[in-house]
Amino acid sequence: MARPRQFDEDAVLHAVCDQFWDAGYTATSLQDLMRVSNLGKGSLYAAFGGKHELFLQVLRRYVASLDRTLRRSIDSAPVAVEALRSFVMMPVGDPEGKAARRGCLLANSATELAAVDPTVAAEARQAYEGMTAVLADGVRSAQAQGDLSASVDPVGTARALLAAQQGLTFMGRTGMDPGTLAATARSLAANLLPTATDGHESRDDNDQTGTHTRTNICIE
Image (cartoon, rainbow, N blue to C red; front, side, top):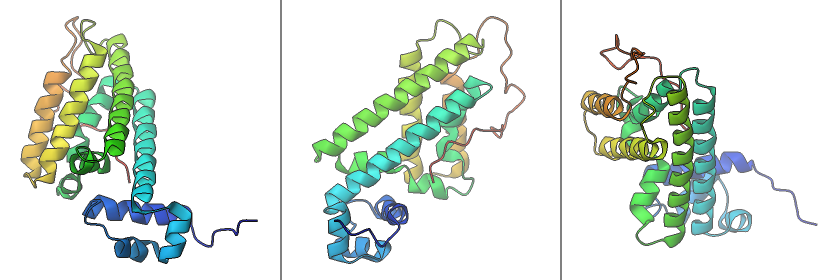
């Protein structure tokens, strides 16, 4: 009979996630993983496998959480277009820029490893396809609510929104001034989510600062 684990698996994976997120895959050593997990080498390998297997488990866990949070944001939003705007604005939610400089674990990992690790590349493609599908549903809801033109292509718009959000994430990683990054995000959202031409007024016409209430779709 297998012995029960004497540690909190969720706590370990959370700590390891933070380590990979902050330092990246290559710069994270086995000693780093042992330190943040409070596990010895044997226990770590027995529970999770090697460094690569542990990283993939953390990445998949992160992507699953991201997918759930985004889907919940889109599905529960009273005004779908606001949830879509919130998605674009997500990289600039922290006015001090700390979150922007940290970036997104998925984007960071794809940038670092996709060219040399086919498994990570496949995981990233699958994750982005899943996010595109959720965002496309949001575009269709916004069209049904009269906030986006019926002529807008839901899938094409969803891919553009994802590309814009990821582009902002990369720009934030460079340490771009938070105000400049936020202004760029507002411009992208305005251009990618044009107001419907059937007489509906934009729901944020009176908001010139970009400080409208946003659905929280950040991953902790």
